[in-house]
Length: 187
Image (tube, rainbow, N blue to C red; front, side, top):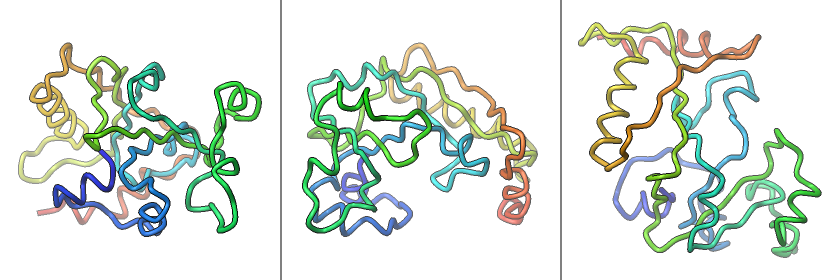
């Protein structure tokens, strides 16, 4: 869902330092998709949350505008043009994009402010911190996976998505980060 749509629905969301700029640039109602697994690449917990939706790239063939940025919009400067911000076509992207580049992202626009994952969700990768939810006495992964599968069912995703336990790269700091914040999970 776009940040603009989340705001319109009065849903809670973390503030982003680019919010005002995104509104000024007309991309506030676009859905932002990263081209990298931030958790894996950064070797730390993703600040956006423990759930990674792996989406079929063919979703970009839909009947809505799709833009691929050359750099993160937070880095856009006054005086630059859209040619400085976006790849002009897929051949320019293919020539210049480097796998693992944090700067590029896909911006998907559509009238509803949300991206329908039906038919495009390949799988979900879910963090698996060694924590137990105190009330239910159930592990974080199992509880979160249950909520995700329930939401997928309510959203009409059939068959239900595969939920994969995250396999962290060597040196990942997420477990330390989750343990540091474990007080949030205590009754």
